[in-house]
Amino acid sequence: MSSKVIIIGTGFVGMSYAYALVNQGTVEELVLIDVDKEKAIGEAMDLNHGLAFGPRNMAIRAGDYSECKNADLVVITAGVGQKPGESRLKLLSRNASIMKEITKNIMNVGFDGLILLASNPVDILTHVVQKESGLPTNRVFGSGTSLDTARLRYEIGNQISIDVRNVHAYIMGEHGDSEFVCWSNANIGAKPLKDVINSMDSIQFEDMAHIASRVRNAAGEIIKRKKASYYGVGMALVRITSAIFNNENRILPLSVYNNGEYDCDNLYIGLPAVINRQGIHHIVKLSMNDEEDTKLKNSSKILRGHLEGIGYY
Ligand code: NAD
Image (cartoon, rainbow, N blue to C red; front, side):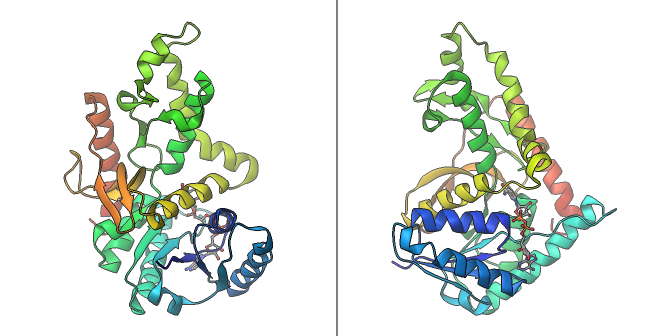
C-alpha cells in the first residue's frame, strides 16, 4: 500500500516532522511544499543526504500542489506570525485565509486522502480546512492535544518515577489556555493514578496540580528560551502518521469533530479518538466528573466564539 505524504510549510515544525519521518522510515514518499520554494528544495536536498544512514529508502523531493493528486496524507504546518500591533483575531482571520487558499490548492487537483493540521490555532484551523475542503470530518483532523498530552505523561512519569509509556492520561479541550487534565481517567498501567499516589508516602494528589500548569505553560517557557517549539510536535505528528499507515486503531488525543459524542458544541476540539488508515474511526467517550464536563464546555465555548468571529460557525 502506498504511503505518500505532503508537508505544506517547511519551517521548524514541518522539518522536525520530516526529519523524524526519515529517521523512523515511516513512509516511502515525501514531498515538501512551501511558499519559499528555494527553502523546500534545500530542505529536500539536506534530507536526501541523510538517507544513506536511515532505516529505509525513501523518495524525497520538493514539489508543488499537483503532487497532492495521488497523495495519501497532507500535513499542514504552514504558519505566519503576529505582526506588530496585530490583534489575535486579526491574526486568526489572516491564518484562516491562508488555510482557505492552501485547501483550495490541495482540492483543485483532485486530492482524495487525509489531512492533518498542526498550524495554530489548530482546532480552529482544522475546522476551517474541513469546511473548505468538503471532505468528511473523519478525514480531516488536527494534532490537537497530542503534544500537551505527551508533556503531561512526561511530567507525571517523572514525578512518580514510572516510564512515560506506562502513563495513560489525557489533556483535553482546546490546544491552548482552556485545555485541562482529565484526572478522573488517569492511569498508571491499569491502576488509577489516584490509587498509585495514595499508596506513596512522598507525594499527595494535590501535588499534581502544578503539573497541569507546567504543561499549559510549557510552550511559552520553550518559546521564551529558544523562540519556537518543534521537536515534540514533530514526533507527535510521526506517531499520528504511523497510526495511519500501520492501520493501528490507536487511541490518540487529537483535534477531532465532536458530533454529539461529548456534551459540548459540534466543532473541532481535543478528544481521545481511534485513528487508522481511513482516518478517525471513532471518538472515545470517557465518563468525566462534573468539573471536567464544565471545563470541556468552557473550552468549546471559547473555540465557538473564535469560529463565530471569523464567520465559520
Ligand atoms: P515557521 O515560521 O518556522 O514555518 C512556517 C513555514 O510556513 C515557513 O517556511 C513559511 O514559508 C511557510 N508558509 C507560510 N505561508 C505559507 C503558505 N501559504 N503556503 C505554504 N507555506 C507557507 O513556523 P513553525 O515554528 O514551523 O510553526 C508552524 C506552525 O506550527 C505555527 O502555526 C505554530 O504555531 C504551529 N505549532 C503547532 C504546535 C502544535 O502542537 N500543534 C506546536 C508548535 C508549533
